[in-house]
Image (cartoon, rainbow, N blue to C red; front, side):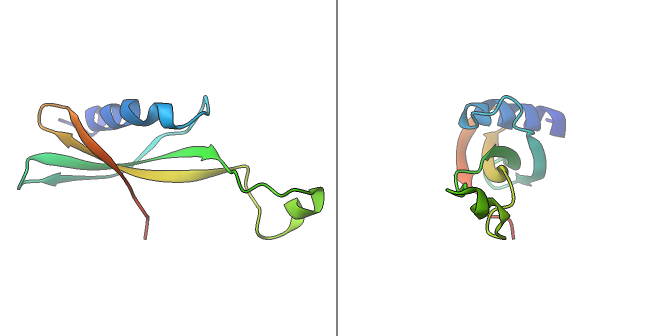
Length: 92
């Protein structure tokens, strides 16, 4: 499998998690695991920021800057192109 195929599989498995029409999916990382013959793929996408301020003045504070934020998920794909799981992923 090439990176384009891996990205497409991961994106299709995660698309329904973002309510946005344009979630800006990105391939962030790909690593092959020889032990169990799977790929660990990290994909990021945008979701709406639910921590919006209650007042117009809250939007001016440093705690709220963006309408959207990027979420990272790790997707495990086997050699038969099947998604075996997806996991929370924290970028370091």
